Length: 144
Image (cartoon, rainbow, N blue to C red; front, side, top):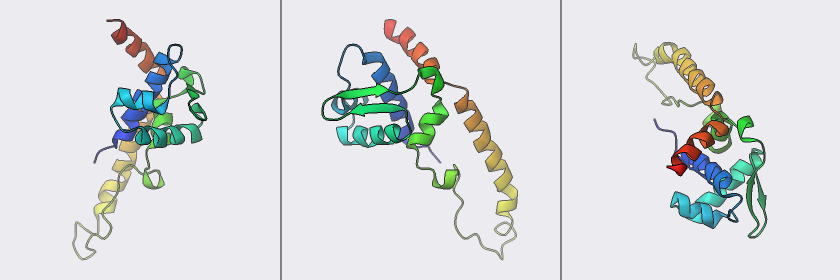
């Protein structure tokens, strides 16, 4: 199981927007060059971030801005904006465990609660980290 790269790309994009907001017009092409992906990937991601209220996008070549203060945006907000997690469930169960097998018929009872606890722990940790935290670290590294 692996969270897709959409999440880390989204964080990268948001940090770029904040870092370069006063020096450049931050467009999908500009962001794509930093991430090193096709601008279409960035445009799709920007649409998701915009729908979540995390950014505003000016039509044409107007650029992109972060819509809320960085300390009000958490990694969980970004994750929820861009990850297509089916029904909010991080873990996906195989569809039809064998009901005749003693393990197959009990696998949900063995794992469901534990997996829910793991997901909640991850979400609590993501909620405790703001984009301001990430930006502060980025500023230190960029100055080096």
